[in-house]
Length: 399
Ligand SMILES: [Zn+2]
Image (tube, rainbow, N blue to C red):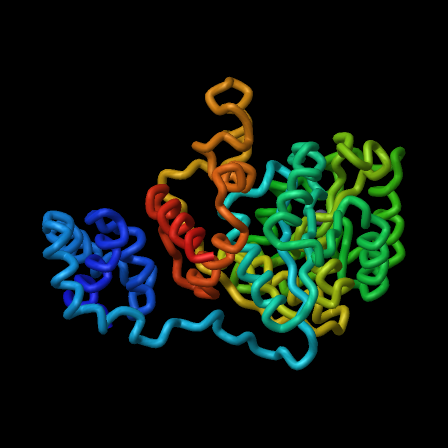
């Protein structure tokens, strides 16, 4: 466990390696071998800072002398080895990372995606990068190429790419399956009225229409001369008494006539995430899913669809949020500031995009190491700008 002697040992070691000045990030990285975790850092950080300060005030001869007695503490403890094992890995694993093309990849994507990637490496499976572009209005066209290149850089060339907007016929095929099972309906109610009914666990008038009517209503959604945008939505028939109103008769597809950057005006009905993700996970034979824990409700919805289609749901894990304090990662905000010339481009050294980290000499391996250290964990983590760079630079030196 962490105690002042262990902290002192690492601070001295680091000070000796850095002209007498120990760096907090590197000392912390060493202490991860002794039970320090992202979660308990806050309990030790004061003591760590205090010890580093004291050590950094000592003349280097004194540091070396003190270290002689404490060297035995370094690396004596078992170093945490790799990632916690996954459940159900008899067959090769198939896992995915699913960015939306609203901007290039940044460190947040890289850390999340790398955890799945490392498991695929560990269990010799397949890693799929699925570009989720079924909302024609939320696409930054250059992002397709950027995501592809950056994924190849960070995860190598064994990955498989899937672009959802190329798969609309497959999603429609599943809608037909669900129509035949009488598990979906086309709702033409005013959203406010629908909401009021669903809140009271009451069906809307569309829900109980005949199956043949649902099929022709679905055709009217697909037909240019049929419903207009906003007039109809495809809904899943779930349990209206579900405790959580968000899980009652949730939507699966809607009309959006905005031209899509790749598909142009070829399609007018677009699947919502619940539908496209479910279909792709089934079609790709996904075995394990790791995703942010704010996707719990989505997971429940996807499980319901798997169940009616008699498909086994992949082994599912939730990952805590990686909060990157004082780091701007919103694509929209970054884009605006690049356009206004505040930043020189996506690879501006002040940004935490992969393009920028690559330019600064950070290697994929260093990012892998950091992701491995974060590991599969439901607890949220917070990393500041300085700490993040120190950790990455430190891993960079080790690789
Ligand atoms: Zn309705």
